[in-house]
Length: 246
Image (cartoon, rainbow, N blue to C red; front, side, top):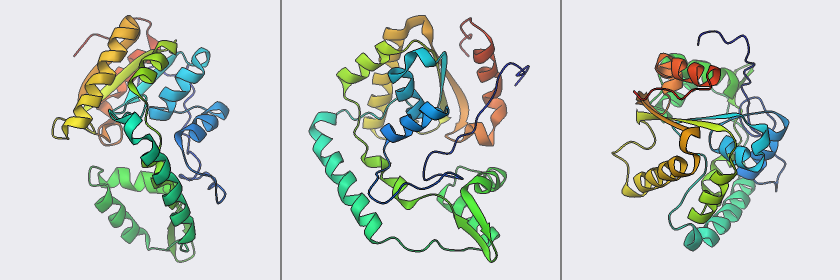
């Protein structure tokens, strides 16, 4: 990524992920808690977007890799109680039926992981499992807390809150969209409409502070094909000028 001597990169595991501890029973996994964790370290993606709006003076540049700065739902107000109820019910259910973590042979663990994440290649799968598992005498155990999946029930941003939050940003923002990523054109109209809404809002509010790039690859392009994003990210971090559109 060029001359990175001036930068210090941090790879962070949120609570319940990778090498970080699990939350206590009764403490839900939600994006707001992850924002608190960033306050102690630094990270990116949806959580980074929220952090950049809540603590705008602490962030100079925000990079979004095939993700949006917030969880959005066009029917957020109508669905708010549903999200809240779902979060509570599923957390209680997950805690009530927690099973001991399964120990699996390394190669079997890798094949299971790749089957559930078919956009990853084998090299990336092995790399992620280094942080995502713990070695024991008879094999590997997954580190991820099963309750983390409940993030799908996080309260989504409403449109008015989206605009207000983006207006708080002081950072320059780079959004890199993968052509076959999470928001590709084959997904439902809801996902596409959300993507277009957020892009239009970022462009209209941030103007020259916002840059949008599209690269070939899937949601894991930064792992599978880092050369597709490395130069873009490096130039964004090192330059105060806008990147030329591809």
